[in-house]
Image 1 (cartoon, rainbow, N blue to C red):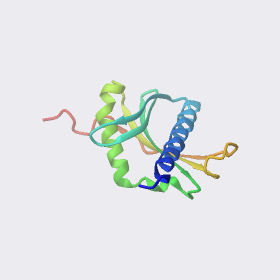
Image 2: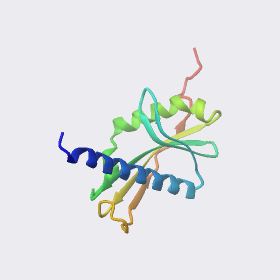
Image 3: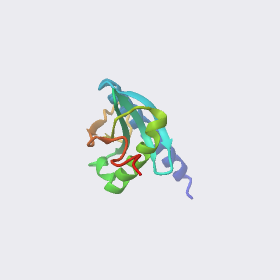
Image 4: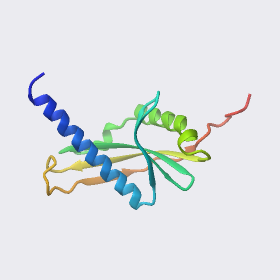
Length: 139
């Protein structure tokens, strides 16, 4: 490990934390309440979990500097893991929730965290799905 690696990881971590903060502010402006951050389950880690009325949303935040499309880093397999994790957590974190959704928020810093840089934020909303899978509870 070179002396540069820990500093680079620390910078990436700080950049990711700033991206999650911006994503949380964006969700709040849309009327969501952020219930949790960085929740780990057997299926996946959820960056943000937010609620608006009867909708519970898991949000994958991808923050990158100088990357053309951070949202493209989230593939179908990742979305499936996030859906499973959200279904697993929903009864405990928001009992009675009827609809779930997985969103992606991409935050792109144009100049590697320059103090005056303004990030671009892209919010991709997923399709809602029922909190309980069809046939749940049937024997």
